[in-house]
Amino acid sequence: MSLDESQTIRPADTTTPTPSRADAPGPDAPDPGPDAPVLGADTPGSSTDAPVAGADAPDPEAPSGRGPRSGGWAAVRPLVLRMHFYAGLLIAPLLFIAAGTGLLYALSWQAESIVYSDELTVSRVGDGAVPLSTQVRAAQSAAPTGKVIGVWPAPEAADTTRVVMEKPGLAEGETLTVFVDPYTADVRGQLTTEGDALPLRAWLSEFHSSLQLGEFGRNYSELAASWLWVVALGGLALWIGRRRSRRALLVLPDRKATGRRKTLSWHGVVGLWAVAGLVALSATGLTWSKYAGENIGQLQDRLGGATPAVSATLGEAADSAGADEHAGHQMPGGAEMPPPQPTADIGIDKAVEAARAAGVSDHVRVTLPAEGKGYVIKEQDKQVPVHLDAVAVDPADGKVMDELRFADYPVLAQLTRFGIDLHMGQTFGLANQLALAALAVALMFLVFWGYRMWWLRRPTKDRALSFGRPQPRGAWRKAPVTLLLPLAAVTAVVGWFVPMLGISLIAFLAIDVLLGFVAGRRAAAAARA
Image (cartoon, rainbow, N blue to C red; front, side, top):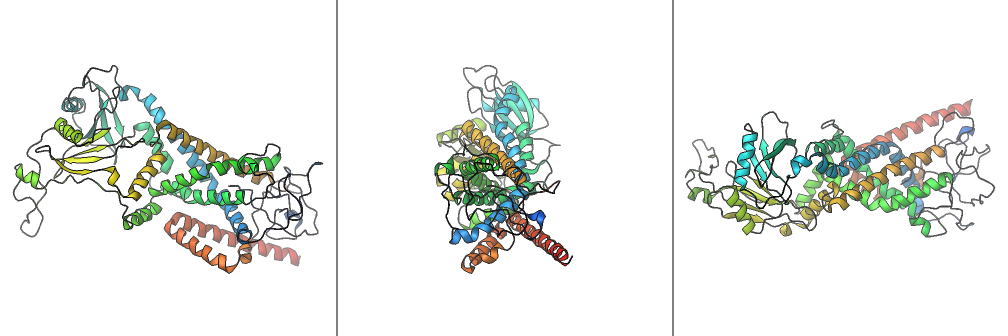
């Protein structure tokens, strides 16, 4: 995934080549051979645009005398080079930021357990837990203005119970969580939370997704995710397509290389090992993005892969328990009667017992009855082997009204669940989080190496400041129509399905055309002079 894979063969002109500072050939340098690529300029003929040694020159150990390669890859390679160069150059800063914030988020799981250890753990493991109802009353006494909406019983012996409340003054999506010792019903603390994320991880999650810039900031992460898979797969194709004399150099860095060639070797090898993880991060990140995520959700629904939900709606069970006999009837004027409020409640302890009897017992989270709804008790053990079953319990008599097994999810819904949890570092626990951290560090190094190669490749003669140039324009004209038309069609479809990719690609093309027009005008003016 190199910013440096952007040179091509150009016939020698009459000017004196300007050597690159990083790649001036030494006394032991081999003859690059007849098809060693050089940096092409958009407007040939100027001494300032003289070629320099290219990143795609053959490795020193490669056999010489081989002619140019032909076929489909040879035709499309210049297009991939130019796309990879511009995408890497312009999107790489966003990828670097996403990797940096993602690294912080991956580490936040362990940091959370340290920073909030007082709230998350008990001081001493007791012989037996007090009833959940007693723990809830203790939490209500500690936060009398809060309304209890959920209870998360302690999943492990040393953990606290979480009592989740709605409270006036909290932002949308935030709740107040009171942490209760399950053995003594002592309150260990209170924190403002978002889902299962405590303040530190909640802040880092928002920082990763939007840079704390709100809805507008989400565009950055979607743009990065939209291009990450393109840059990664393009770089993979370029790296595999390079000539090399030893196959080991495909998967291991070239320790004999120096200068820019050494940087390219590390860039390519690390990219090769990281590409599967980077593409997976890109795909899973897009699932909850704003624009592409909506398209993905619609496609998933049409394919029958929507995530199901357990039904907790009170029906005949509520009527038989003494609910309003007019429930579900039409009021004068055609208005629907509001759903009934249950007149009897067996209590949270018996509801949890009913769920356990139905096989829902690992890391459960209880949602309390609301208007027209019964208890919803879900497993939330997302670490392999996962436990994600759910049941709905009638508060009047404790009967299970509905149950949903994760094994019964559509395959697409299961894959979506696994993908999101992998992206968040939950599926394999600490190993998952360390793998995410390693991918983030790898991506940051890939960006750094790409920019370093771009800088090292620059011509230095007669210029105080200069940069390496991309693959020359017009490469698409050399591609056969039978290859160009399907490629254009696929690009259009993907650009529509992933809007941030399509919009930014159009913007890149417009800028490129404008720069080409300006360069052409300057070349024409120079020729007339």
